[in-house]
Image (cartoon, rainbow, N blue to C red; front, side, top):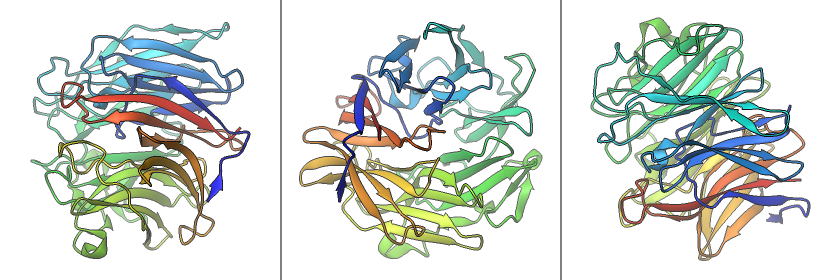
Length: 419
């Protein structure tokens, strides 16, 4: 195993912040300002936006909302606009919390390096979706060819929904939520990827692995229709919702019963920059054992590679959640790079794994090590510069996603850059 370059640098952006891995993009690099934009929610319920300047090392932090539900599901996801403004989308999570809307605010960079913060807005139109649940998990994507923004989330019916905003329309002119995937009484979990031009892709499950044995499925949206990885059409978006099995499986829990287990959860999704073929990471479960997977579509079939080492099982303490892995994610600028968290000799390590042959062989480099704290939920900022590798992660104690339960979460947010 190699060591990180002497030019590499790690900075702590906050000592009190956390996120789930289902609100994305949760960090974006902006070449115009040479800044990384990211955000988190504290264990006291403050949602924050951060702008980190790579050259100076300065981090600017703004409070987006204070006194909110202290729950790591409520971290913001970001949309970077052509004019340099940044919109943050966030929601509440727990059923008993009164706020049901998707909330958003826009930050505008100023010449002096500070930001003006626009008023908080609400997206509430759920007239096409029935239910009393929350609009959890915001995932916004703009498609330049379509001149529109899609906002995906969990809807009032506990299943995935989408909304659309047309370029040039009033900022509040979002469409009503439309059902996207239905699998009641379960709740499918999705990871997303987009080329920013004409395509959004989806990696998803049947439900929560604590409630149902999961397969993993893949499809993409292009030109108003949903397609399998091989390009065969599933149905038009206007005819949604689908059920999970309408798309083909990436992980078949029955066919892969041994030794990969009989359930799974999704972690990340990207695409080959040349072929556009999808590349994904997910975790499968054999009892309490967590198995990391790197899988790619070669134009005809999915080729799956397992990481055969101890991933440490669940990070969440005292049996509250048996399926919370440390995590493995892709570098979307170069998806031959994976960052993963795992325990080693009583410590927690964050490692970078690189492959030049689609996952058959790997070279590794240790990015960080913690002797007492956990390292979890890494994430690579979208659009990072090609000459600078980078990764964010949480570091600290994690006992529950709910700050009221079992000690909650006490984590910092750290950023590593290769130079």
